[in-house]
Image (cartoon, rainbow, N blue to C red; front, side, top):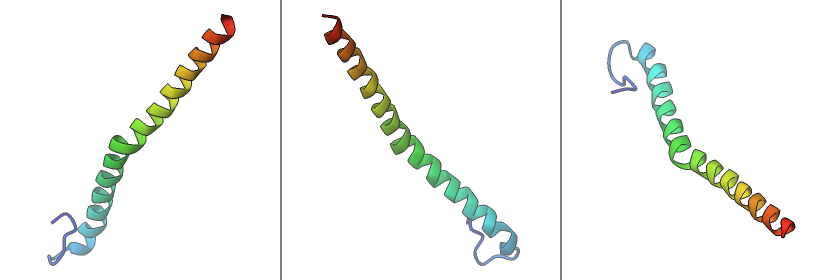
Length: 58
């Protein structure tokens, strides 16, 4: 339906449908996979920096 297959005027709707579905897929992957992974990497580096500072001050 979003791709506009088999209908009159599909030449105009098909590119917009492809972009819309592609955007939904990419945003879903970013939200569920990439952003939590990047957050986890940065939070780990902050924790190790705090541990290193605590050990060097003792």
